[in-house]
Image (cartoon, rainbow, N blue to C red; front, side):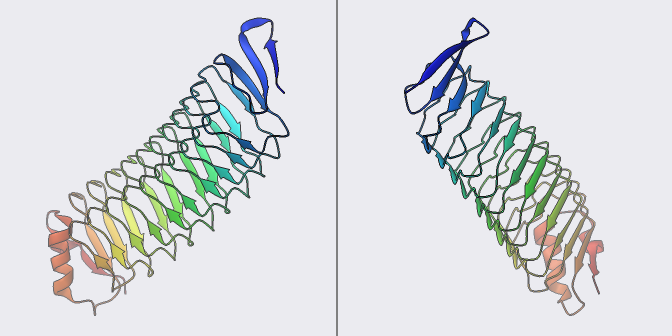
Length: 293
């Protein structure tokens, strides 16, 4: 059963109550019927006049591509009953500014918010264990991200090219950050890595040109190559694990890097100096070696 009505007597504005039927191309407002527990794949694909969606409290799942390229959609409140947001659900919703996610949500699919260029803030509930591949890739206005304890993985290109993002705190429950996760976040000036993270993968913070200081706590055991390539304002690196493996070119072309701080004098000086030469490629690298205690 569906209902359709005109808003303000304007024939260009169409409101429907959705219960699984075909959706007209000129729809502007949608209310999801209380009987709907899943919005099917691609249900509102390219409905580029759609400005308003009201989701019902019993909705369990939003299928893949459901609202892809709904370019007029400006806000969405995901109900607390919703367990899964499929892949590319809001991909290309370029006017989407406000998204509310609630505790209970478990899965956010690949590229779910890819190219939501107006999105400004997102808080990930603690019930979400993984930020999938390219979830927030190219969200150019995204300046605030809240990640909660319970999150375990940040996958490839999750926040790639989020050029307005200034600060990120990684929860202690995250043990690995995948490749290119924060690649090209050119305004990212503060990264807080909490105890728990073990591995920084290749090119994770590549081209983060506003980053000036990074501290690796004792759980970090490997920093892969090109992890901080072209972070040309990075001045200080603090490492608390003397056994950490730092791959070749991890800090390639970090031209402002002035100081490495290592845990203790027992770290072999020759290895440290070699690291300065092969990893960093910055001028006068010997002057950067110092000790934490």
